[in-house]
Image (cartoon, rainbow, N blue to C red):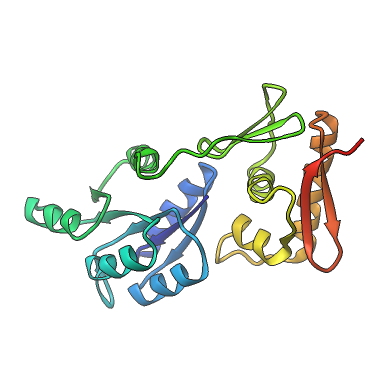
Length: 225
């Protein structure tokens, strides 16, 4: 799952990105409202952490546009503006939650999970493929009921593939969903991740295969044998 951080203080942006990455998210960080709107055009973000005091304006000023163009994005205002009136104005403007600085990062992560669980973000049924089951809500995989444990990158890769099971997924799509904006990624890195994931799926007898579509990308489907 990809989260957009809109924060102009480099140390804070780096801290948030590091903790989100450790928690299994892909974290992209930008420092202006203009860059935030550009990122929203390029990628699908279920969640955005938005500061209010930014070099080119108040984060609240883009909420109406975000709500009209990207209604599925959850927005949490993360800001030093802490008065009751400021909280009310932020929530009334369309934010899903409001967290004031300084804050505990564990609380932030808990709030993110809570916001993403809300009813208007409909729970998705698990993807069942061979003996593999992928819970898209909890982002966990199981083989015949037992946890399928892989590293974060490979889990993100598996999620990107199973969301489109039976369909070709382009190299560019996989790279954009697995790696952050600031990551320098070579196609060989993706190939290595696919190779490792294939091996783990085979070892666990998951009953699925990842096919290479030369020059295009990859496809996952139930094993035919």
